[in-house]
Amino acid sequence: MDTYMPTIETKLLPATGTRGYRVKAQIIDGQSVTIDHNHGLTTEQNHRAAAENLVKKLSWSPVLEAGGHTKTGMVFILDV
Image (cartoon, rainbow, N blue to C red):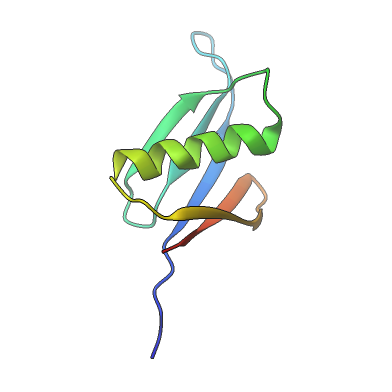
């Protein structure tokens, strides 16, 4: 029996002329959140914060486990 493990992928969005760096968290169906990059946090902490904001938006209650780095960000696996 296959077990579905929801994943969240995060990526750093570049600064523009009107906005600073941001981190976007997205699940496979396209639902996402974007937060401002907090320079007081580490890179991993910023990506985790974005993933946690998406979990909250979706009213999920799983524990996030860092799954690893990608070319543009990180992947988090939801331990449900």
